[in-house]
Picture (spheres, rainbow over the protein chains, first blue to last red):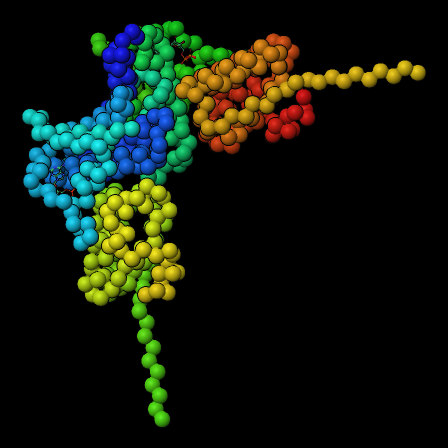
Length: 151
Length: 151
Length: 112
Length: 112
Ligand SMILES: Nc1ncnc2c1ncn2[C@@H]1O[C@H](COP(=O)(O)OP(=O)(O)O)[C@@H](O)[C@H]1O
Ligand SMILES: Nc1ncnc2c1ncn2[C@@H]1O[C@H](COP(=O)(O)OP(=O)(O)O)[C@@H](O)[C@H]1O
């Protein structure tokens, strides 16, 4: 390794995990375990347990939304592709989710009125509040969600 | 679902997880967690903890062998593709591992003499003794290991 | 002199949850909550002290219980989780404002 | 009358391991073992009671310690793990035959 760029490429390649799961609740805890192992492998985090919990919860919400809203019929025959990548400078964890379900209509969403006690609408609220970056892109092959947490 | 075959296909699809990891020790515990979640999700196992441990250990040995022997140079830039699948009738867990490293020469292996206290050769011994089926196939794209545990 | 003594009883139920309360585990809790509401119970204490993970599905069920109880003149009090990350989640979503938070189930019952 | 009293000390070392002993965690243990061997220590007790996972890399290091100790007239005794799956692994690999198994570190030291 001679330049900074080379070493960054090596890190990106080394610290990427890909996971492909059935779109069911059953295996979401596996994803949670992967995320917590990844977060807790990072040295010098201020609050590793809290960070790990928050990342797990945000990604869990993104996946339950895919199961409930993108795959409205037979989610159990559908799948979610996930990539977890740890980057340096600045240090961050990037989670990419791909599904082949229905597109997401961002205009369908409004901020929940928390003090009124909502029954719906906590999912996206949590994702946005627990992560530092949340992007949605509709691709020809499906939906792409990107969640980033600065570490 | 009208026929047995259809329902088996659905099960196979539903209970398959794919994972792709850097060929480093660092993330092997993630794979272990996935395996234990999968084994422990199965009802009515006689000794779930022991079965889970043994499957984890065998797959761990297969992966450390890939890291040490298949990827002899720069394993950290190489990857292991893993599929974990739970099948019914008969109930079993099948683990498929793919790497793009050097071929495995089965003639290079001899049974360890346990009472003499070996330094090498425990890996394949454990894999064979802890699993019910172990197959190796050289494919054009690399090496394929299949490990099966009856549940 | 006529003396008439009447005895009343208000049914209150403590629901103690443990571990993960999320989309993958919610079904039995939802069924239990519906059954209690249909039986006419409307005073509840939610004991979340041992809860270690709570998702939007879990949050929604807690709010559902609150709304249905309040519709019939009841109320739901909440014992906060011990787990710090789960506590913060309940603060972020303002559940500490929407529910009356109490120290313990015993204190909650004596304050209805 | 001349009386001469000599005192001898044999150095024995107890190595107490905890948790996972595998390819991903072995390096510091390997370094420690080599340092002790190079210092001339050759009586060891391996306390595996708290070990919860052991792989072939871990097994190999235990055997390496045994061989090197025995080469210089020493010995290694072993306290078995509490974890049942790890116990069975040590039986499968015949470590209960290759090592002298003792109940505890204290018993091991008094029996050298
Ligand atoms: N992955 C998704 N695909 C399609 N629509 C979605 C997705 N996620 C959320 N939505 C839409 O946004 C709305 C708000 O989602 P959310 O905040 O998670 O609350 P809830 O799931 O409780 O409705 C959903 O009701 C749904 O219409
Ligand atoms: N995945 C693999 N690819 C190539 N060679 C392998 C692989 N696994 C094992 N081998 C060969 O088989 C031998 C025995 O392996 P093993 O029983 O795991 O013991 P050890 O790894 O301690 O040598 C190795 O030394 C190596 O030569």
